[in-house]
Picture 1 (spheres, one colour):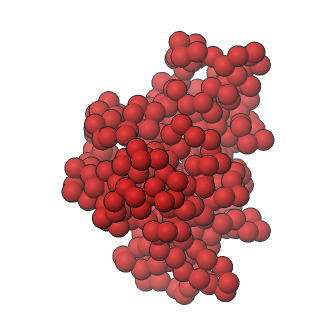
Picture 2 (cartoon, one colour; picture 1 turned 90 degrees about the vertical axis):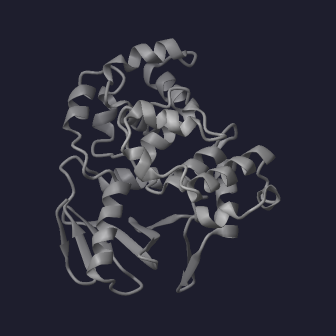
Length: 301
């Protein structure tokens, strides 16, 4: 990925198929989001790199993604890690030409790639965050999932205050591994969700689970390892494979949002069943994650 160090500013040269505006639409889908903020078409995100808190101000100018550092210019090594983080978060190193070629001939996806041209999967680079956010969202509506996430972050995450604004980091697995279930029950987590979140933190803390371990496996083995963690079923595994590991064949086929999007795109009276979805997806081989993400995007009109 090409990037330029301009002192207090980094410029990243994105791939041809990239739309910062479309990515902001997806990131702005909930006003309950606590981990990033969008103001005047600029994205603010707090990260921790080399044990330093770094606030990123991400914008778009002259066909370049710009990253400023409101807390002061960091070292070159930190800037390098910031670029790596941004590339991972926005999946910038993916060549999407194959996806667009496939989708241009697909009945379901054809109109979506025109409407959302340049949209890339917005990932969750941290494995613990991806897993526990997926666990929080199990069997509840999205609004309450965001409520749980906000409480979780504000009780156990790290923060900075700058000019009257507060920016948060997601809690670390090390901190959550030390908790007991009652600490999360007080935030309205069910007992099972509390157990799953704490159990996931302990699995990572003990080395039973790691992002590095997972990305070295093929998709089938990734799913096998993930579903062996208590509280992680096939949907959660594929969501994490898609959003954190950036596995392109990940396909959360039972996802309600996916079903609703397909129903709307095809003008159906009822949601398609799994056999119908499998048939539709037969053309998407190797691009199931992107097909799903574009269908999700269609829900935010």
